Image (cartoon, rainbow, N blue to C red; front, side, top):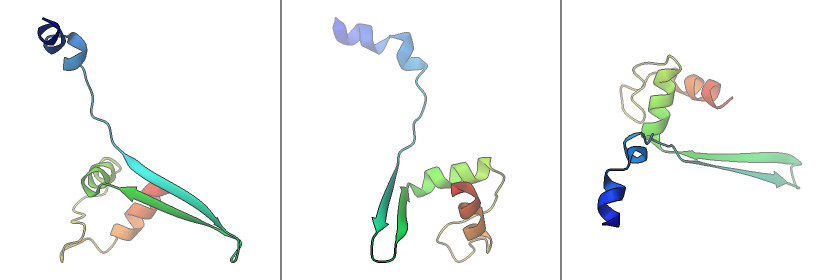
Length: 77
């Protein structure tokens, strides 16, 4: 009975996708600098870049847009 109620719950039909990324910030005492690592799923990054106006990115392919690094930098900034 509970499973049937959950299946037809209106909340389930209004669910939205969510995106996951990991950002790690470390302080390097030796260099006195911040080191920032960001892990993003490539397909999520492509969607975000396209929404920001970048087109025909082709990440990691031979036909990759030569301005891809600039697009990613501007997006992360």
